[in-house]
Image 1 (cartoon, rainbow, N blue to C red):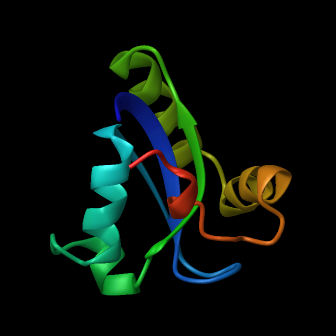
Image 2 (image 1 turned 180 degrees about the vertical axis):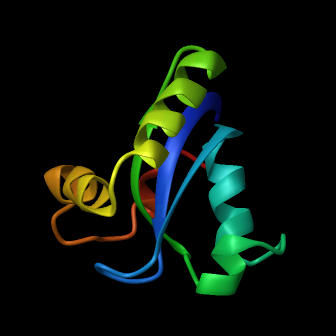
Image 3 (image 1 turned 30 degrees about the horizontal axis):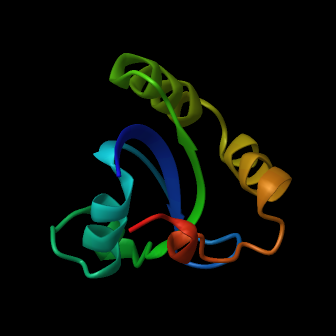
Length: 96
């Protein structure tokens, strides 16, 4: 589904986390999971989708991504824990 989204990937529970923004969440998460593009998520094994939010407009999603990235690690972990306390992989929930 093409819709602006902000997401957080993790290597494991309380492990390395990565925050990103995309217009096609299922496609982007697939790219991260398969390490199709070199970069942070491939290097640190961030293959689990642990949090995401959809937005109407890309500028809103980008603003939210910047807000999350500017926050502390503890704030990112709290954001994940608030909706996904077991850190389950949310990838299967996406409408592919």
